[in-house]
Structure formats: structure tokens, C-alpha cells
Image (cartoon, helix red, strand yellow):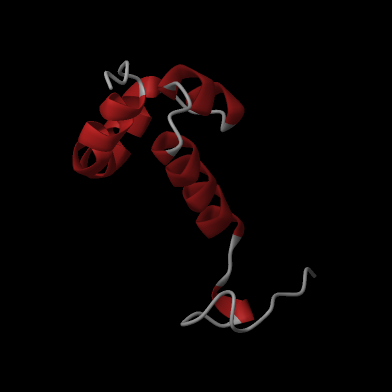
Length: 75
């Protein structure tokens, strides 16, 4: 079993960490970093439709920041 620094995973305990939780956090991190949803879907063996269904709130909450990162900065 992998070991976790208790402070790094607070407020969870090591017994709370599941493969599903790791998969979920991986998908969320990739979406927030602007990885194309199709790539995220392929890497996690799911579909774009399922990601959009399950993570639409996350996408909507951060869409402004993701979009701004792709814009040209005019000084």
C-alpha cells in the first residue's frame, strides 16, 4: 500500500484514499490545467460526455480562468 503524509491528505485518513478518489482528482486536475477534455477522457478510459456530465460544475466554475489563459495578452 502507498504511504501518505497525513498533513498532505488532511482532512482525510489513508483509509479514505481509494482508486476512485485518485482517478477523480486526476481528472479534475487535468481539466483545471487546460488539458483537452478528449485527452482526459482517453487517459481515464471514459467518454467526453461522461466527463461533461460529471464535471460540468467544475468546468463552469473555472471556464473564465481557462479561457483567459488562452488569450493574447495586450500590454
